[in-house]
Length: 373
Image 1 (cartoon, rainbow, N blue to C red):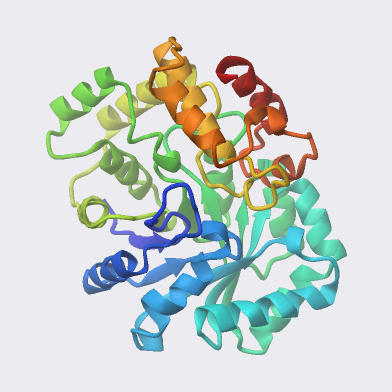
Image 2 (cartoon, rainbow, N blue to C red):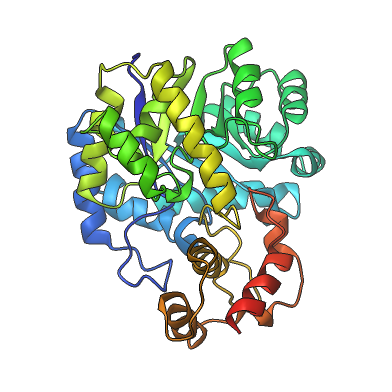
């Protein structure tokens, strides 16, 4: 298996308070960053809204103030939802440099492109702006993260041949998924020889919490591989994948991921057949395909912790039982003491406009309210 680069995704840093996505545990994060750098890898990926807007400030404390600038590669992103006019691009970029403590970024991405967002990025001049930043030496390489259909991906690349890499959602569950179409996007990029950065290789943890029947089958075939390792190795087995991002919030995760990307063991047809079967089972089991990225929560006027409610709902549907004193019901009651209820949704749609999975969040919140309230 060709060796790949393991990237440290900074979207899911460890938290001091699980109910507060901005409460980054700086001291633990320092230990994770140091262990990761000591392994020989050095690619970090953050963004403006990650960890309740606290990921970029955390980078300064856990990485850039503590390690030489030439010892790591740092990537961040511009999201068009925060841009009203062309001048906003510079304002955001300058703020990102200040927050992270760097004078340039090794990689800079336009965030979450799909057909409607691509139109907005063009209208507001963000694409031209990004290439200007590269020409000025403030960005070394330019790319974009993508959450759209294959036709739009091809169109973007045709119209903007200067992009040097693309970040896509890729895992064995989304490989043939009709809404994500990972396989076709992967093929388009591979045909053009554009390096691929993989996000969501374990689909927000979904490919860790697999059905027990498949957990046993995985163990029988490879006793030392964890479910997460299966997912990482699947992606690492694909040609043209340059970097695999993983949100690592414990030392055990780092060790497991390192072993997975450095393994010389092949991921063959039998392994691929087994993960395809697991993907089919998971698709039938999960009611809402939320990966827990939390993009939707930052601008919610009702302070609804959407991913948390969807996780409870999925757990309830998986078990097919509900008891107000049971685990899902108890967690829901605890959460609504701090956050807005699912039924508090006013249908403004800001969450759906930013959701990379295209989930009908307003409709699904009604389902949560119907079952838990």
